[in-house]
Amino acid sequence: MSLWDGSGGWSPSDTDRHQWLQVDLGSRKQVVAIATQGRYSSSDWTSKYQLLYSDNKKNWRPYLQDGNIWTFEGNMNSESVIRHELQHTILARYIRLVPLDWSREGRIGVRLELYGCSYWADVISFDGQGVISYRFRSKKIKIMKDVISLKFRTTVRDGVLLHGEGQQGDYISLELRRASLQLSINLGSDQYGSIQGHTSVISGSLLDDDHWHSVVIERYRRNVNFTLDHHAQHFRTNGEFDHLDLDYEYNHMACRYISPASPVLFRWPPKGGEFNTGTLNRTVSV
Image (cartoon, rainbow, N blue to C red; front, side, top):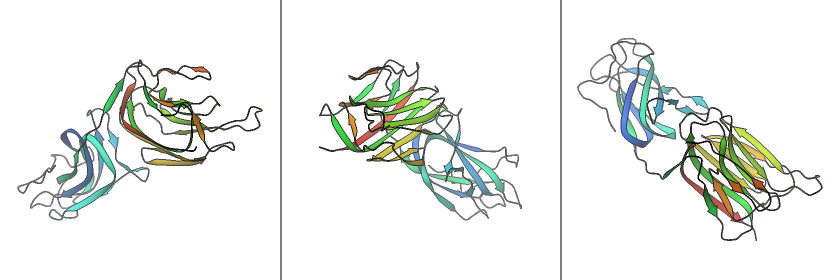
């Protein structure tokens, strides 16, 4: 997508930090790079800027890098092209460029080019009455290694995204609690209580913002990487066991899950949210 214009470029009537240039990509796209120039044959350019993105023009997210709102270095004249490869791909329909600093010889000015491609994904909406199950070939499996990835968006603060458990008390659960994401894992506890395997980690906040959030859970034995929107936490599960013993299925966005061991009721609130296509890889120990 290009806004190069050999005869001019964008220059707002006011030159201050309240100006922005908004681009409608027509549909959701993957944006991987951005390039800017100043306004053609002028003293107008933008030397620093930030990016915001949205799917609905109501809720905007800033582009983050290294955990911070990222400021891009722009142009120092009107003709040179400054291009930035994005460390994290932006998935959105609308992009805003917000100038932070500009030419001292003129005013804000920019020609813009965004690089990327179309985005296709299966999106499933939930209304609080449905569940998706990943069923394993064996009724009981011992999982040594997991890689689970998914994307979700919602406007509610509490609910279950993923749950699986076994008859021996092992479980894995991914839940929204007060708009933060909680991952709970138990690889096993003994019947006498001397070994407690429950481990719980919380990440993020304000996840009920109707934006897409990406989650990756990678586990090898007791070592876990829990990544939410590119922010990774590394931890080691409690206890002494290193296999996850499950009963033949994971449940996604579970509104109801009943295990053979004990009944458990989970509810995702009505009009709870959407799932993007998720993946599940596992290594089973026999």
